[in-house]
Amino acid sequence: MAHQRLALQPLRHCQRSLVAHTHPRLLSTTAPRSSSSSSSSSSSSSPNQPPESQTASSQPPPTPKKKKPLTPAQRSFLSSALRVNQAGELAATLIYTAQTPPVVAREPHLRPLMRHMYEQEAGHLRTFEALVARHRVRPTALYPLWSALAAGLGWTTGVMSREAAMACTEAVETEIGGHYNGQIRTLLEMVAGWEAEGYDVGDEFRDLIATLRRIRDEELEHLDHAIEHDAKKAQPHWLLTGIIRAGCRGAIWVSERV
Ligand SMILES: [Fe+2]
Ligand SMILES: [Fe+2]
Image 1 (cartoon, helix red, strand yellow):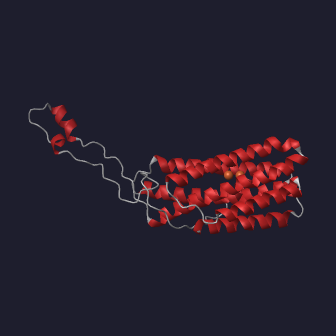
Image 2 (cartoon, rainbow, N blue to C red; image 1 turned 30 degrees about the vertical axis):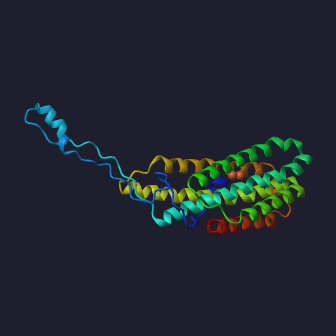
């Protein structure tokens, strides 16, 4: 059910600057070199060659597809996407770090679940930290603020109740799942455009889309866990999730820009 709801959410990401880089696809800022190096010697036929050899040498080798340089808007999109994802995953790890002690103190049987979700968030954070470093993307300037707010949110909801902690996860993952869906949709549109124009998409872009899909699915798995553990029973559920979802949207909007 959660997947269906998220799939219907509209694309809503606009972005800004990307710094210079050297990677062949995500970071490409210059027109790629044409690989269609024609060879006059290989294409010229000799009267002494047998007929079949002349036929083979007259066929030009297949020309590898070129990669299309990123537009400034596409580079800006990628820069802000990596920046906001890194910030969001840091916040997620801090929420679980702060939530786990009070939640597990009351309900020790939840320790494996809390650890599982934390470890997946830590893996997401490592993924985006590596991408941010590789592509020299500036981290959000509000890193310290998001860190403090995330830890405070985790501790507060963890102390309130198990249901409140799960409602926090429900709210956060609903927003983050939609956020990743929007990024995936934008990347797929870029890929479709390149393919329609006959350009090579490259492995790095395909890998990035696969990574985002995997992480999106893990976030939605967390959402399902939260629902299974009574997130809807938090009181008042509508207010708690409404505030947290609005906060997530605000943090995403700001982190994409600052
Ligand atoms: Fe995550
Ligand atoms: Fe998550």
